[in-house]
Image (cartoon, rainbow, N blue to C red; front, top):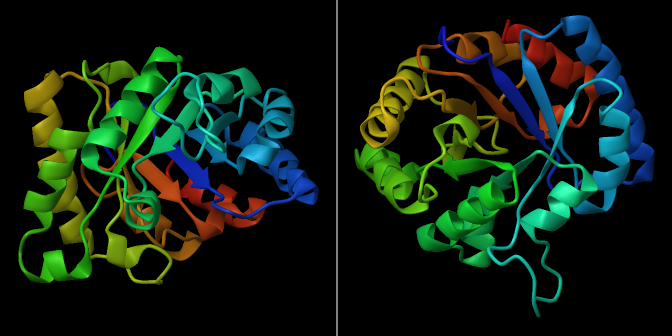
Length: 250
C-alpha cells in the first residue's frame, strides 16, 4: 500500500445480480459506514441494477460504477450504454478494457482509450484495465505487454486526478491463482513509472490489483508496494467477503 491517495476497493459483479441482490448493496453500505473514510469503496453491479443500487449507495456514501460504456455519447448503437447514461443512473466510475471485454468482444487498445475518454467527458472516473496472459508472462514479456496496453489505452488527454488503472493478470482472473507479491510489486512499479512519465510523479492516479482477490490474500496483496487498492470479482458478490477485503486495505 502506498502513502498517497486513500485506497480504492472496487467490486465488479460481472453478469451476476438480480433485484434481490440489492440487499447485498444495503449490507455493503452499512458495513462501509462502520469502516470510516480511510478506504473508498465502489460496487459495479450489472446495468439493470445501477439506478436502484445508486439510490441505496447514496445513503452510505458508497460509490457505484458501470462495467463498460460505449465510446459514443449517443446514436444508433443497439444494446450499448453511453457514459452519460451511466452517470445519469448514478454511477461515478466505469470499468473499461476488462480482459473479458477485450477477449470476448475483440476490444482493442484504441477502443478502450476512446471509452475512457468518453467516461471522462461524462464526468465519470474510468478504471482502465491492463494485464498479460500466462503465455506472455512465461515468455518474460509481461511488463512489455502491459506497458504497450497502457500506451494505447489511457485516455487523451489524461486527467490524472480522475483516472484509475487496474492491473489484472488474465491468467489469475477467476482461477484462484495469484502472482507472487514480488511479481505484483514489480508490475505495479513499472505501471507507476509509466504513469509518472506521462502525467508526473505527483499525479494521484491509483493503481489497483485484480485477479482472484479474496479475504485470505487481500492483506498481503493490498499492502504490497505501489498497490493502491483492488478490483475484486467474485468475492465482491457477498457483503461479508467484500467488506473483509476493504478492511484489509486499512
